[in-house]
Length: 186
Picture 1 (cartoon, rainbow, N blue to C red):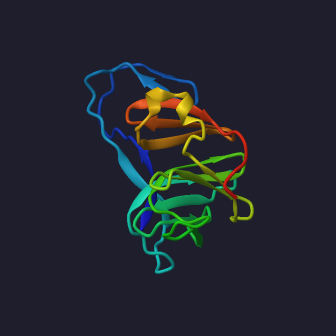
Picture 2: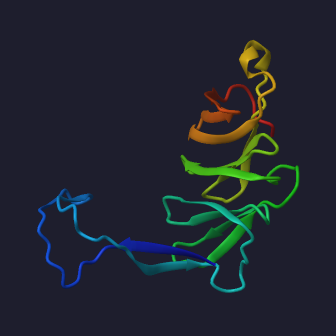
């Protein structure tokens, strides 16, 4: 089960001596000695019934339609839920084929595409958020690594999608932007 919670603060029966400034998104308080706390309010529960049992949740993102994509590293799947929390479907499975995963890394959504980094296979699987089908995959092994001897022998630690053609990759502490050029693996 995964919960989406709203956090809020409340001050009941307490004297407040600071001033408050607000711009509709951020509220700034000038009082420094006020005890702070948060309270939770249940908004949506994902996987509340037996439709999906989570293994090891690692990341979650949402698309423009409000669907929520939750990566499950134990089951090697992305579970998709409607905005109301109802289970829609799961993408992928453990394996080395197209749309399959060995280790789920970063997931993100750009331009109606779900990017799923498999850092064990050094690849990015790309799914359409409209059809929920695999539409492309890219190998993260640089084809021109010999041009950059300082990257020789380094291992990929993470990759973050910047936009549809650029990834930010961490190679053992050396972060570099990597552009996609040429053809995908599919």
